[in-house]
Length: 237
Image: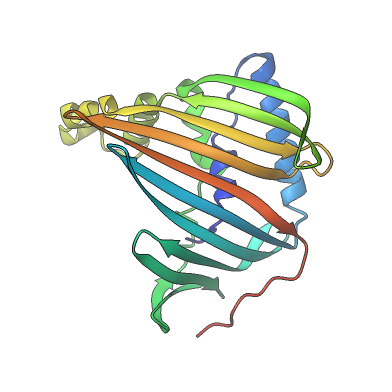
C-alpha cells in the first residue's frame, strides 16, 4: 500500500456529496480533519480486522507508523499478526518491501497514481451510495472532546459505481455482479473526530455477506495512538 493508514480509507467514505444538514456537518468534520492531517509530521496507529464466518471468528491485528511531509507519506511501516500471518510491510523511497520469517522481499515500486489509496477523489461518485449520515457532537471519548459520525453505505450501489467507473459495464457480467451485490449487506461506518485537534481518532467499518445459507461479517477497527511523536521505521533493506 502506498498509504497504509486505514484512516484515509475511512475518511474517503464521507467524500463530497452527502446531503442534508448532518451530511454537511459530516463534510465539515472531514474537511477540518483533512486540513489537520496535512500538518501531521508522524503518526502511529493500531488496527484489527475480524472476519466471522458462521459464528467462527479470526482476527488479524496491525500496528504501524508513518512519517509525512506536506501531508504526503515519506516512510511507513505496518506489522501484521494473526490469522496465520506474521510479517511486516515497509514503504520507503517510493518502494515497498515485505518481511516474513526474518527475510525481506522487494514488492516493487509504489504506484505513481497511488492506486492503493482510498482518497476523497476516488469516492466523488459515492454520493448516491450514502444512504444516511448522523452526527453527534459534544461527547467525551477517552477523555477527548469528540464528535462521532455514523454512516450507512449501500454496497450494491457502491459496486455498481465502481463497475461503471472502471469500464467493466460492457463485459456482459451484469448478472454476476448483481448476485455479488445481493450477497452484501450495507456497510456501516462509525468515525470519531477530536473536537480539539480535528484529527480522526478512531473508527469502525463493518460489512456483512450472506450466500447459500452462510453468513460472514468483516469488521475493521482502528485508532490513532500517537501524533507527531517519535516513531521507529526501519531503513530500506
